[in-house]
Length: 281
Image 1: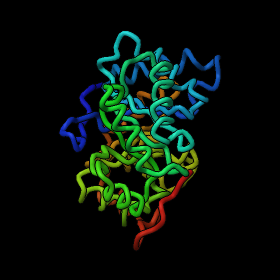
Image 2: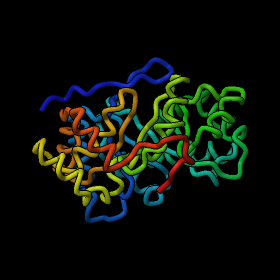
Image 3: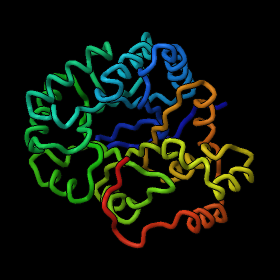
């Protein structure tokens, strides 16, 4: 299997793999840890060198799984982590990042995101990000679960347009961003990072998805991921806790959806007719 993966360019001009690896629900079971580490390492072998995690996932244990997986290969990996909103004051953001760095056993995080909006003012969080940038603890910062109005508020702040990415929910059943946030993000040259491309498995029972997957000789999960990957400037971070699922995720890049497939998807999962509020899991 080829390891070459299409790239998406960040506002800085740096390019990262379009298909990465998510870690939500990793680190929750000691028995699964060896398999999770092996899965992430295989993903690196296959070119999926962007790994997304967060301090929230398993109360930091997911970051520890990532640390074990990237040991000896740290310079290959583009790590994304997130600060919880309750920690997102200037001082709280810095301290949260320091804790994540310790769990990740690294001296920097490539992309550090505000997980979602909380009570602290965005100016506070941005001040924390700026301090972390100055210290070399992070290379870029971004946000997660921000709608168009949130992004407009952010971009109106001093330093706000430096946001590198917005990580949001997007899949066949959650297409609302196609009519609002996605065009806004393209207009501002900032890529979306899509999480939960298979709706945490709930999509896999859909009959239309199964029929299209059967035509291609692949799994419904692969077709669901391929649907999200078709967006030229979108990063996609499916989670895979086993080597089998990692290989399946990587193979989703090789699926060429036809006009007929996309028309069937539009019938089964109608695209938005106008802007909708951002959806969350």
